[in-house]
Image (cartoon, rainbow, N blue to C red; front, side, top):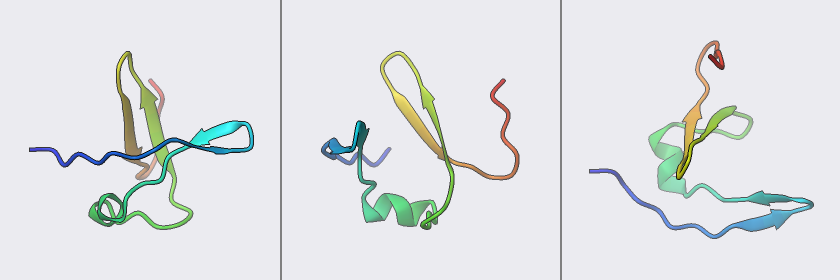
Length: 57
């Protein structure tokens, strides 16, 4: 069963931001400076940690 987090959207300049909860970061071993790949779908946003090379095909 997936783990669900509820977060608020904030503003940074002209952009919007969300903060990833610590348990989510720990689960993927995310560190400051890591690159994430964001895929926008009809009703969802998928976020994955970039590993190795990535192709947008």
